[in-house]
Image 1 (tube, rainbow, N blue to C red):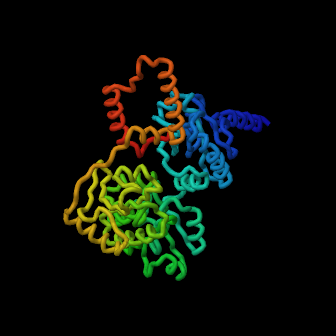
Image 2 (image 1 turned 90 degrees about the horizontal axis):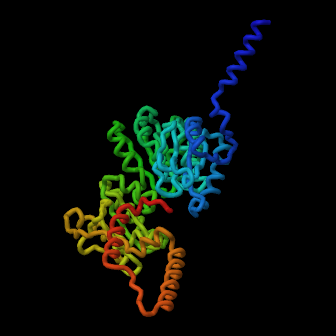
Image 3 (image 1 turned 60 degrees about the vertical axis):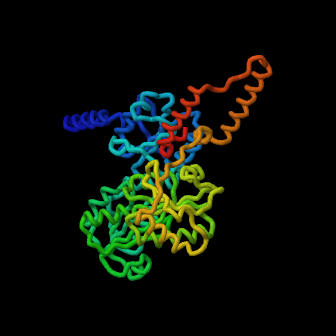
Length: 430
């Protein structure tokens, strides 16, 4: 009797000593609301927690909120060990300062208490796929055709996918750990002849990389030494020819190779698609260079920094290293519609032979910079209100004309634009 009493007491004490953090947060498929009193406890309680630092007045935060609600529900249904939380960083400024929140929304993923910046997609389904990457095995082992199909469906379309056919997982494990945040990795041990045909490899071992969104793929048959394998993986993180947008621009900036950038009027036009196919062929023969393209219609501000617009002759080709200068090839500043394949070849030949002209990127005007920060509609509303105030002042006091700005003020504005334009690609929305 005394024995059972002692056991009961011990069990009661053990239950009383369960950490409060385990009881404090109920994971039910909704976004957790954090504050300064429970933030550290939440970070410690969960191995993976995705945090949205928001401000209630921020329109981008308001648009993001329903996507996070849906992502939290999807993660809960899939039983992934990832929790989504949010904190009002405008109210809890200590947390904002501690985690270097300089704009809204700021998104961070905490992995075992360590935060990393999140720059991935914000649509709920894509966000979930992105986060699943971090809790997946470094290298997945696939043992059937259906296993390969299930893996591809699970991986989604955001990351490039590397599958080693006939390779042991230990061969690519080091690189898989190194590039875990940027790609999916798997090895397939048992597969049919149909798989060989589907993924265009004719012998094993083979490492196949493909990009679900952009379609093209590449195959390596070795050697599979770690450094050679690493170069292959690094050079194929992006497709042979990639569109320039906020996500790919970040990867372009981290790539040490120079970029052959083609600026066209509209990426989706039929003639642009034909040009992109020609660029892919050139890229496969010039892997020491990165090939990219951007449409003026898709990203007008970016194209304008290279003095390309609807009013200039397009397509325009340049060579850029991510700095404030770029190279144009003399005699091939733009392409005409006839035999573009040979024009691209002669452009590359001219670049390699040094027949180039060095130019500087065009800095944004003060007006375009302001519009990029606050939005075009808001900008024109402000202009209208300011114009109304100026007219009112003139009517009230006609004797003393209104002076708009001084030289010192104009110089200050120019200096301000010069400093801020250096980091315009990495700014927060608000």
